[in-house]
Image (cartoon, rainbow, N blue to C red):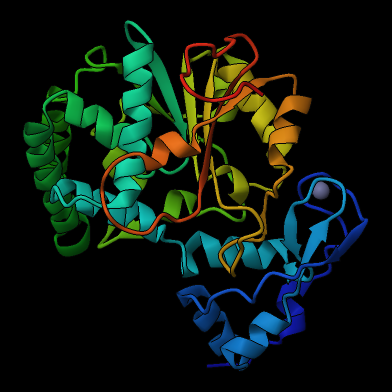
Length: 346
Ligand SMILES: [Zn+2]
């Protein structure tokens, strides 16, 4: 493999990627874990994984408390690396596989707990959109509520069929992919259920897996479009057409975007309410350029939004296993969220 110079794929980032402040101090958090991302890059630049991590020191913003790596990857390299070299959202695919197999895991259970809280407290149905990763949010719980086993069966058939069509057969074998999509739509009428008109919103980012998140030849967006979701729509197009949803979800995607606070404002415009899952404070590795800090809740207030912390709700699910340290919030600029039980309003 040709040698790639560390300096050629990295750049200095003196300012906080969340708030733009340059006043900072070194993080005292322990070094990040050696993930598949770390190993891949370490091999590319011919460094030991531990040495590679040392070259990406973590800083803490004195203004907003976010933690970030300086130096970090150039945008061009990040696009390549997260776009396709390691362009697979492992947790999303694992979540889908576990749900299809009915295997109880905390990753899926936290989302079901959030879905149940919404269902128990909001009458009627909600038009719903979710950002970027189709396998990390509320769609498994939603499908379960509409006849989980039948929908799972169709989901498994569809995954097998798409794997066969895209990974193993010729370009002339596409009618069966269309037939599989039509069957998936039949069991998922878009007006049926609690979360309806299910829309997968997309917004590009060099730090997110996006379109090329592929497993066994099947792209996650292609799989989700006719199955867990009714349609895909760019966030930009939703804004241009004045589209508004009763609820918008962003599950471990906001902290994979280059300008998260601006993006959050945009989500609050297209969504009457926004459900957020963000990674735990200060936690990063080579998959994550930055993490919001303990001051994240203050930033929500500064947006003019009312918010409630749903982290405790997300963890009250009874499925044994480690939590990933994520925090969950619901926020809104028009709903006072007084229906959320047992939490202090922000
Ligand atoms: Zn900051």
